[in-house]
Image (tube, rainbow, N blue to C red):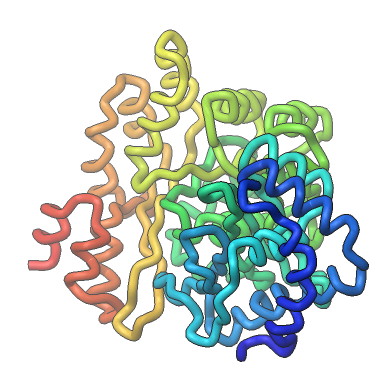
Amino acid sequence: MITTIDYDQVSNILRPYISHIKDHEEGEFLIRSLINMLEEMPREERNILRDHIEEYLAKMDDYDASDIDLGGRGCIGKIWYRIHGIKKPIETSPTYSKLETNMLILNLINSNQWEYLIEHKSVDLSYVLSSDVEQRYRATIYFDMNHLGMNMRKINSEIRPFKGLRLHPEVAKYLSLKYLKYGLTLVTGITGSGKSTTLDTIIDANNRSVQGHIVVISSPIELVHDPKKCIIRHREVGRDVGSFREGIVQAMRQDPDIVVIGELRDDVAIMNALEVTDSGHKVFSTLHTASAMESIDRIIGEVEIHEQERVRVRLADVLTCVISQKLVQTLDGKRVLAKEVLIGTPPVRAAIRNNNVAEIYQMLNEGSKFGMHTLEQDLKRLVDERKISNEEAINQANNKDRIKQLLK
């Protein structure tokens, strides 16, 4: 058994409550009934339920797991871990009923989060272990076929060294407030590609090297940075500020040097980020895109058609760097960072301004003196260093023809 708290003990606590659930109860009505039961439950019993789930969270280190999933129809009653990119159920996990996992999940969040979950059918939050306030998790709880599912991602409290990103010195200058006081930098990639880890490394490098004021606006706040040379404010949407827009507008009155926007989720966030950058601040954010060119197209395509030309010109003026990354499988079964790096050189700015984004790939290919390279060139480097296989390089490449040429 993976937990020191016996599953039978948890089941015995929940059984008297769950037995009162009617067969016809489902969805919002069911969840409200379960919430009422939790409110009546003694604190000692709720602590046992919390500790039961926190055992699984604490055990993630033993498995080198990045994520945990449970609940709903999709998990078939098991606890799942993602280990080196592969998601699978824990062999020693007991089989929970959907009502049991509903209660276990609801027990982890507060009354405000209950209401948000019911209204929006999903809630994002940060979670801290009761036994270790330094260990944080990024969580999302959502409806799955009228029951609840949950994912939590372990946030590494240990910040990776900037040198580990293996960025060209010219690129490092673009990322540093010491050398460049303004501009928009994007860290992009699919879910689970390590965007937050890279962004935290860049924030930490600035925090260690230059005096200033950094405002982080995110939903939720993941890693919490200790002030070193910088004042660092962490503002979680929904807890410390009502929305990304409010956070960004308020940040402008707080005398920041760097504004970190957790994610450019929509046209409003994009316009706000451009507004902050236009005002002469240094802005970092993330996008769910696989390449530098796709990132540019996404930003422009996300806004209303009548705004696109103006946004294209503004983006050309303020874009300083795009790091598009993936975590790829190594020969020893682990994962390693592969990335594409674009710098806002005059030719790149002209290509964006003139709507010739397709030309940028060639600039990436030929821009090594500025620290630029394509994802395919970086995958080729990893193959040459015998870290990944040819097959993995081809699978992960955005441009399949180009990687095949490089590998010949």
